[in-house]
Image 1 (cartoon, one colour):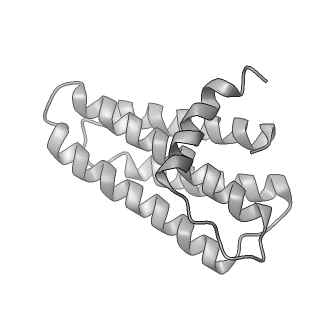
Image 2: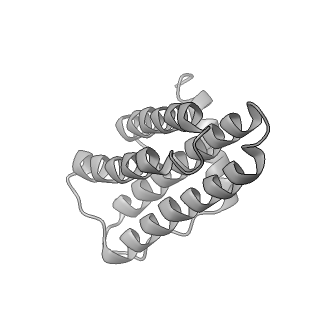
Image 3: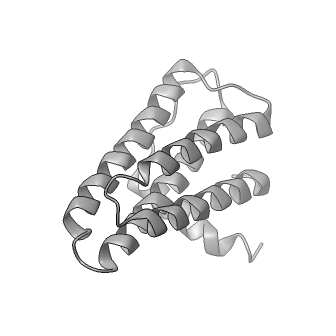
Length: 137
C-alpha cells in the first residue's frame, strides 16, 4: 500500500473510530456516520489513483461496509450495556473494518480488470501492523 493511500485509510479509520466511540450510547446511531465515511474512503482512494472499481469490487465493498455495520450493531446491543466496554468495542470494530476496507480497495485498484482480491485474516493483521511499520520506513 502506497504512503498516500495508507495515510488516507488511517485518517478515515481514526475518524470512524472516534465517531463510533462518541455516539455509542445511542444503539445503531454510528451507522449514520461510519457507513458514509467508509463509502467516502472508497471514493477517495479511487480518485487518488485516478481509477475506477469494477462492479465485482463494488460488491465486495458493500459486503465489507454493511457486514461491519451489522457486526457493530450486534456488539453494541450486547456489550453496549456495559459502561465504556461498548464504546471501546464500537470504536475498535469501526477502525478495523475501515482499515480492512482501505486495504481491500487498494488491492482492487492495483488490478481493476482482474477479479477482486479475497482478503484473509492475515490481511487484516497486516493492515493493523502497517500502522506501526509505516513510521519506521
